[in-house]
Length: 389
Image 1 (cartoon, rainbow, N blue to C red):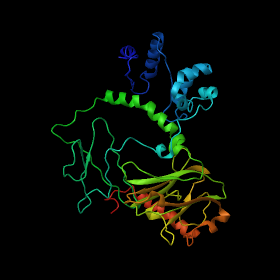
Image 2 (cartoon, helix red, strand yellow; image 1 turned 180 degrees about the vertical axis):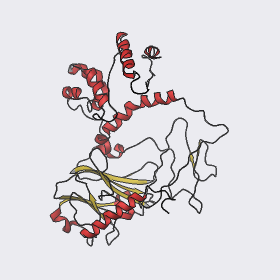
Image 3 (cartoon, rainbow, N blue to C red; image 1 turned 60 degrees about the vertical axis):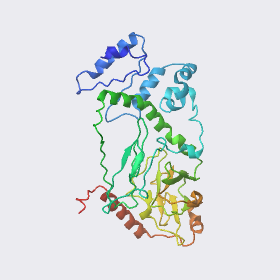
Image 4 (spheres, one colour; image 1 turned 135 degrees about the vertical axis):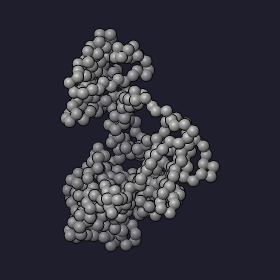
């Protein structure tokens, strides 16, 4: 089989082959012999390896790419990497040492720099979803128009993705149970495993490239301590806003918003790689049930490393730099500009004079009780309805 692959290597759809088996059966030796055979027949061979429980991020790719580039000149590296130089230099030290930073993806307007998984074909929210008195509902998806059917989404030809967002405005809520079944005159034919493996292998390059660049392209990498948005989400189900924070120990970013009648609001921070700290031992995120309003109904969040004694403190979990994100979901018609009132970087010594009149504050005892409550509520998310009583 492996020799047959060499005959297909020039084809546009050259296959991916997965060699698997128990430890010690000779997988590495087999692949090494095949690599020697391929090189002898004029193929370019890249080799990368890793262990299951250790190694640097993208270790096999780094080894493969830098090993291939070897002692190549700068001109040869430019020729080999082509339009992919901006992505590949992020993981290939040799290429980066020759090219420096060749620049990331073309600059986008902030609205175009949102995370998009494709064009929205259809969407349902809890405002449009019809359920029975027990909260149960059925959604249908097919290529036909609804023609009076409730909870129906008309889909298009070709592969598509169904995304389900089960947002909890209270951590004590039980997750929605989802069951999916394909129905029709005949069940769909199963897809052979080798085709699934090939499709996964062919998509991994774009997948890795996307996530390597995501932190550099999201909202066009805005200046620190500025808010981008609110920006509308595809399908009209909500808005998002946010940006990057950069704070000294004695600084805070103060952001005041209104909920606009949203069924869900959320505020969270993450590190520069968009990985969120654990939220149950620190107030690194807040949803609708975890915020206290100002006297006028607005909400003031304070992002800082040190607890400022403000009710809606967003703890950075020791991070001096990272991302922050605000979400509003399921709003009725509203001017998005009214959702954000103000954003200001201040010294902690100036905070009291910066807060809106009557902004709620807490004591150390109240904060401790809040953390204990968050831990308890977060743990409840992992209980089944029967186990919870």
